[in-house]
Length: 421
Image (cartoon, rainbow, N blue to C red):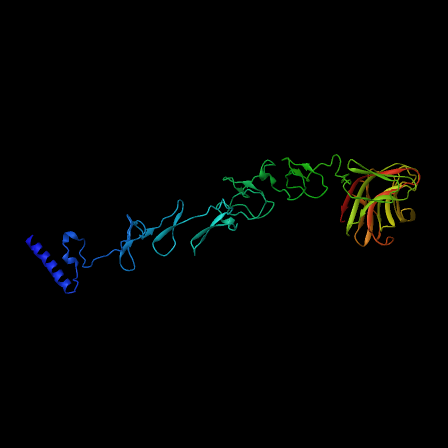
């Protein structure tokens, strides 16, 4: 005890002597008792006084101990975690060990469909591009853009071809592999169906449906077929096309009238009125018109007839049928200078029968005019053919009508079909 007091007084005396002389003595750690210090270095560490409870310590630019701004971490690279808001994610925004909170946007609410990340700025944004859909799990093998339905059928065995059999696999995905034909109740029942044939909403399934205007019957599986059908009964003839929706206009109407009936048009023609008709502007060549009609109002006058005509706006060429009880019934092609003036007969084809309805057809290929007649609307007999401008200056109109010289007559138009051959 005496020794420490002696040392203490010696230090005090030495300090006072040196201070009095203007020299400040160095206070080294060795002069501090061991019980009053921690560590064995020979240098004192100073602090700026900028500390905070529970914060981790760090050195500032001057070597002072200051607060690091956050609690100390354990493991990893150490460093600090900056304050963040709830539901943010931690991200290293610099190359240091400081982690800061970053928000990820809710892309569903804002209309986006995926999250973009900018590596240069560390910012998350919502993306709106639909690219990359084929890489989504479960879409393996699906060809993008095929079909218009909203639902996606997933499978790795859907081929890119069209008209293939489609059924479901063990995982309820779409597949074209191993499907079995089973009728309309199963998707696999579409085996062999020809895509795009017909416009009905129901699908008839068979691998043997072909051709137009063909006989149609059912096969052993209840599907539609044109193979092996019995021809017992009516063949596929007398197929009518409703003419009531065609926009006809009058030619030499006079007191004639037109009446719309069930899928037909009735033209009533007064006597001694010349050729009276209903017509449309002719289509661009090549074109054809097939007309189905029946005559009403019979007479023994040989100068009465109803049929199909073409015109240049003034002159007419007409294919017509004599009244059924005429003394010399038949089909003829005539030329008229106008609706009231007969010019000449091109051809006269008699017949020993008068089927009803009649089917007449005119075809304009841009070079020739060809006239046909038929008893079933399918099998046609050519009546006459000649250069299209032999008599007419041009071909501008096509229509139906006729003339009745002695008594009132009429015709019922039951079918009107426009074609290209």
